Every structure is written in C-alpha cells, then in structure tokens.
Image (cartoon, rainbow, N blue to C red; front, side):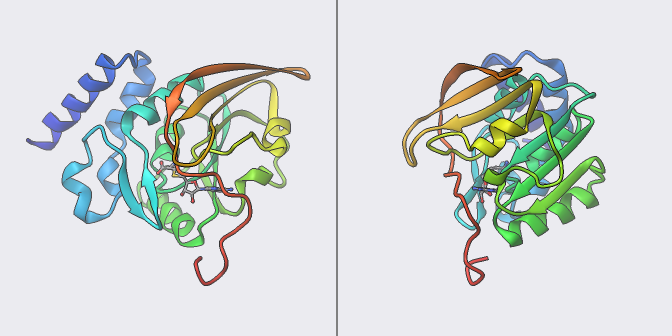
Length: 215
Ligand code: SAH
C-alpha cells in the first residue's frame, strides 16, 4: 500500500472507532509517525498499532493518541504538559493543537532523541526536558492541560496542583500489566471532577530516574 493510502486507511479507522474531532484527525494526518520510530518499523508506521521504540517502551497506538488528544479538549490558547515524551510523537500531535507543549521523559537517551527529532521536524513550540514527571515541571506554575502517557496507581499530587483552575488532565490510572482506566479530571477551584473514559494499557509511570548505567 502507498503511504497516502495507508494514511487514509488509518484516518478512516480512527473515524470508525469514534474519533470525531477534525483538528485531532488533521494533526494525526500531518505528523509523520514513521519519523518517531526505528527504521525497522517504518513500513508499519500507519498501522493502528502500538510499536516498540527501544528501552522497553512503546509508541502509543494512533487510536489512543487520538482518543487522549480529543479527551484533553485542547485549543491553540492552551499550554500543555505531557509526562512521558517517549518517541515524541504525542508531543508532536499536541504541538499542532496547543499554543505550547512542555514534555518530560525520565530516560535521558529517549529525551535527547525526541528533542532532536522534534527540532528537525520544526515543532518549535515544544520544549523537552529530561526528568521525573511525577514532580511536575519545576519553574512553571500551572498548565491549562496535562496529559500523562504512562500509568501510575494514583495521580501524583504535583500534577494535580500543576493543573490550572478550569484545566483538564487526562491520564491512565491502574496497575502494571493489567487494563488501566483512562481518567479525565477537570479542576474548578479546589474541586477535581473525575470521569472514567474506558480501559487502556500503558507502560508504567515510574517515579525517580533510572540509574546512570541504565540511562
Ligand atoms: N508519549 C509517548 C509514549 C509514551 S511511553 C509517545 O508518543 O511515544 C511512556 C513513556 O513514559 C516512556 O518513555 C517512559 O520512560 C516515560 N515515563 C515513565 N515514567 C515517567 C516519569 N516519572 N517521568 C517522565 N517520564 C516517564
């Protein structure tokens, strides 16, 4: 199948699965997903599948990227924080939907590769950082939108307090190697309204940094 045909097929699959936000669909169509994965998987870049990207991590399935991006209700006025840069693919999709994206990754090598890639592809409104995302983003007080792309047993306090008043946070919550629940949280003052959006499966959100040797 030619690449345009593969892209069109993916877009049709996302629509069939219920993704309706045209801005999100357009962003998925525009971001070259192959550029965010190892060459061995380039031919499969437009499949609606999660694929390995090294360090035991995966690039999320396009449907999940679309679902979470849609659930985040992000506009071009918003400042977004993403926890778990991974390949940088989700950050690239968010960069087309938001004003600015800050993204943090706890594996140094992955953070550096993603940053380089995002620069090369000119996603200039994305700022990458190597660090532990469970602590939020030191120096930036609040975010209009927060997306966590790794699953923890609970949501770190630092992320809840980093959510601006009126803000929305989307995150998978639950145990490792089991189905987790995708949660959407809306903050109004000191109230946090929680909605469950369905079952998902993500790699774990791990507090702290890997030991230097594992980098
Ligand atoms: N958003 C990624 C896919 C997420 S994979 C993409 O589009 O490719 C989840 C990522 O979260 C992994 O790279 C993992 O290393 C990272 N991660 C896990 N715990 C973390 C933490 N505490 N802080 C920052 N990143 C974390």
